Image (cartoon, rainbow, N blue to C red; front, side, top):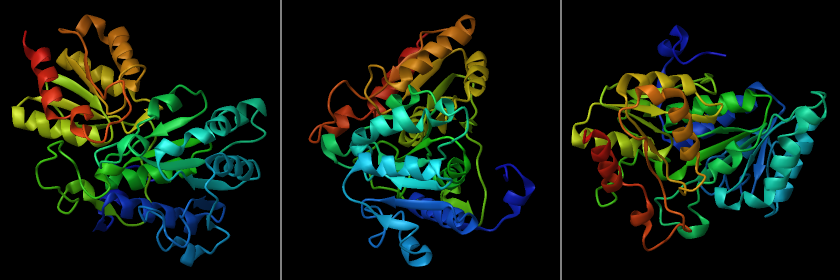
Amino acid sequence: MIEEDSVSLHDAPTRQMNMIEAINDALDIMMARDPDVVTFGEDVGYFGGVFRATANLQKKYGRNRVFDTPINECGIIGAAVGMAAYGLRPVPEIQFADYIYPGMDQLVSEAARLRYRSAAEFIAPITVRSPFGGGIFGGQTHSQSPEALFTHVSGLKTVIPASPYDAKGLLIAAIEDNDPVIFFEPKRIYNGPFDGYYDRPSKTWKGHPLGMVPEGYYSIPLGKARIVQEGSALTVVTYGTMVHVAEAVLAEKGVDAEIIDLRTLVPLDLGAVEKSVEKTGRCLVIHEATRTSGFGAELVTLVQERCFYHLEAPVERVTGFDTPYPHSLEWAYFPGPVRIGEAVDRLLKD
């Protein structure tokens, strides 16, 4: 594995990519390296996926390795479990995370347990890709963020990239991992970083440093957070689209915050969070998913347990609301600049 801070990676030529292109490149590289890697799902073959993440892969690798399936998420995941048990490395796509629920039993009762129940005679090296999150007016059935459901399941790993650079490196690491990985792709930032200001012109990844993706193979270790920026006033812990929203809000407010992009929720880089909170004494957790039992609740608890004597204010969290994702009131639901700014003000008022 080539680590992201290695000399060889820094010396590698780079190419401008958006997140879709980076994901496609990762799949292409892994399918070329390992004939056991296969990908399949609804419309991923000839059509190249609804977001074109698998474009041209069927033409290059054939219908036996890149193929369409019926509209049956339970069957997609069930087939992946069987393939993995026979030695393949399947990368099934669930077209939207909102549709992953029919496959939950296969993921929870079969994929996550296979190594344990067989005393490691069988493994489940499955990477389930799926676009998730809101910000695109997808309404209640195309905007959900169900990541907390999977972090609760022993045996599953949960990965969420926030840039093209991370998307490629983390996806390669996920495919190489011998345990099942849920790989959620924040679709709001497929084509560019989003600062949360929906009434401003959208941005692309062009010119963004994390849009310059090294060519060829590299991987980013699962369980290693990224320090987006260092600071001393407070620690912001987040992931996915909210990394960019937090960065923009704090820059506009002129707050010297340390922002941590978790990258992977399980395994969690708790050491990076502890180190930062011990330095700043204040912590803000942000995610787009609903509030109750969201992954932010786990993060708040861990910070409280591990950093209690360093805290100078109660831990704050800004999340979605406990309601289905609304269509007409999307930006009221979305944890945008106003609510994040108010939480920052509360943390810094003393």
